[in-house]
Length: 226
Image 1 (cartoon, helix red, strand yellow):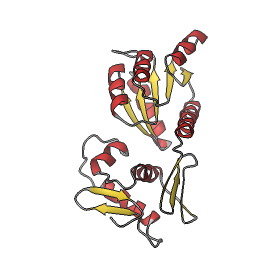
Image 2 (cartoon, one colour):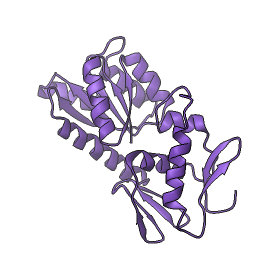
Image 3 (cartoon, one colour):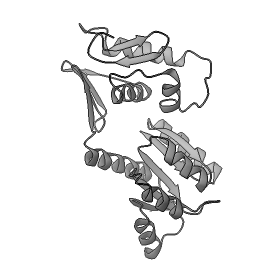
Image 4 (cartoon, helix red, strand yellow):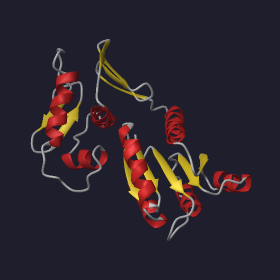
C-alpha cells in the first residue's frame, strides 16, 4: 500500500514512516499542505494521512481541494483537535476517518488498512490475475495453479505493481518511484535482485513464464510470449 503522509512535525513523520514501512507499506512524506496537495494530484496513493494544522495550506483546505478535483483516495485526518465539532468539520471537508492525537500506532494502522480495504471493495479492485497467477490485496495472498506462494512485503508490492500494469512495459524508473519510493536512481542492482527473487518464486516451478524482461526497456508480466 502506498501512503501519503502530510505532517509538518518531522519527528512524528519519521516515526510513522518507519512504523508503516515495517508493516509493509510505502510512505511518502509532505511537510506542508501545498506539497501534500501537489503530491496527491500527481501520484497514485492508496491512502492519505493528513494532519489538520499544516503550514502554507491547512489540512481541511487540502482535503476540500482534492475532493473538488474528484480525487477519491481515502483520507485519515490526524489532529490534536478532538471535540465533536472538530471531527464533524473534518468529515464534512471530505475526510473518511478522524483520529485524535496522541494515538496508538496499532489503532492508526488498523484504521488505515480498513480504509484501504473499503476502497478496494468500492472500486472492485481487490485482486489481480494474470494467467493462473492470482494476487489478493486484502488477504495478501498469492496463488499460482492452486499453490500458495510466500512473498516478502517488498516482493508483494513489486508483484502487485506489475500485475496492476499487466501487459504493459514497466520501466525501472516506474518501479523505483512506486515500489521503492526513490525519485533518483541509486545506482544499485536492487531491482534486478528483487526481480530475480520474484521470478524464482512465481515462475521457476511452473510450465509458463509470466515475468518477462523487455530488453532495454524494463519488465512486463503477461500470460503470452513478449
